[in-house]
Length: 191
Image (cartoon, rainbow, N blue to C red; front, side, top):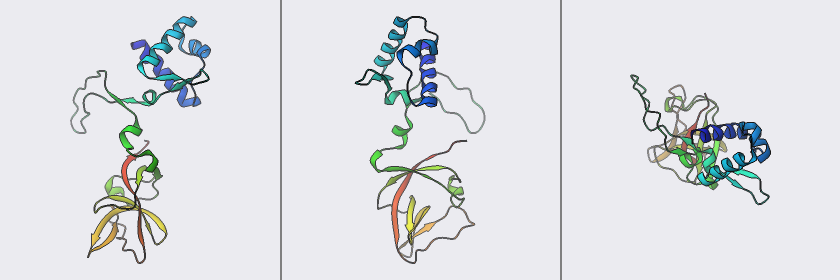
């Protein structure tokens, strides 16, 4: 199965570049498999493991599990170094991990630095679940006087306000309407 993991990795890289899986004929040359029967056996194992499936027109297609990434069995310390074990681990797709309601979830790119003390930086993608209500302390995408902003929802004298997470920015006390577009449920940052 360790060769199969290597083959799966090669197919995942191919998919990332081309947004499609190679044909059966191309898989052999891509993976260095000499015979059609070895390609067929590999594909059968990958189907059985739930990584790929056949479409009605007999092409290969990735399944949800194909995109799952392994989760290390241990933790990595942010303090002093500690050895970790590289065991076979569970896997999760980012969608499963971050998105509970796909039809109500959008990714919003952050522009600016008003939320840096909450660990949200310029260029980050925030995962936002669209909903018209939020509670005090939620980080929300709000519409204030017909403009969108990302801030922490707070209460002041019985009225909702939007609090930045950077002391260089003022609290937003809406003059007119304050509408909640959605609540932040996750963050994606590419380093």
